[in-house]
Length: 92
Image 1 (cartoon, rainbow, N blue to C red):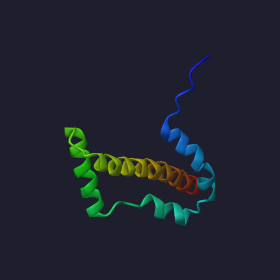
Image 2 (image 1 turned 135 degrees about the vertical axis):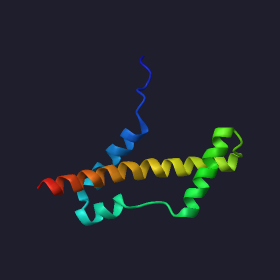
Image 3 (image 1 turned 120 degrees about the vertical axis):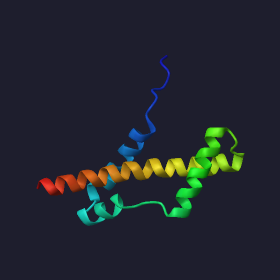
Image 4 (image 1 turned 180 degrees about the vertical axis):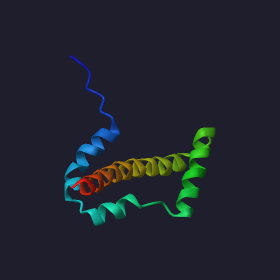
């Protein structure tokens, strides 16, 4: 028996978000593309990333950092779909 196929997490998220991408208006797509973390959140992510690189994350910090990474992956895919909507609207 073959082992289960490894599915890239971003590809899985992209498949789940396909219906959302089809619902985006250009206005909503522009808003999604412009989303950024606030300065305090960005600083925390960078702090956790540095600690991760150094191998000094506590278990709670590792959970927090994993949550940020998952959220960033989700938003990256969603923003990609929003950019596609905007590119399609510009070409129409």
